Length: 141
Image (cartoon, rainbow, N blue to C red):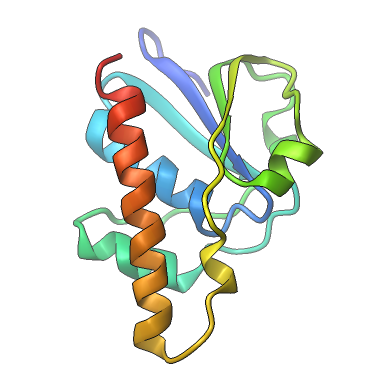
């Protein structure tokens, strides 16, 4: 899985459907030459269609992503493991094979309710928060 010469990063969220998928896509898009990026969930489900839509709006295609279990990465070593939701942080406080562990909780956009445009607005907000954090956290590395 890890690529020669790149630092490896694993984003973990509960369902690996939105936040971790967006973080994976953003980091790969912005800094993919320096980072080998993956994501997984403690209870994987499916990639949220709203996440796909809001990522497409900023030119990042995650249509090929799939929701994966952290079990897929059993035995793999990562330079950095990042939990992006509180539930995953509690369920997975230690990921064996992970170097540095960081927790940065973001609101769960799957919980947003309302009309289509209101839900999209919530997803955009979380996407932008993730993008800002990824830029500040990984941009200088």
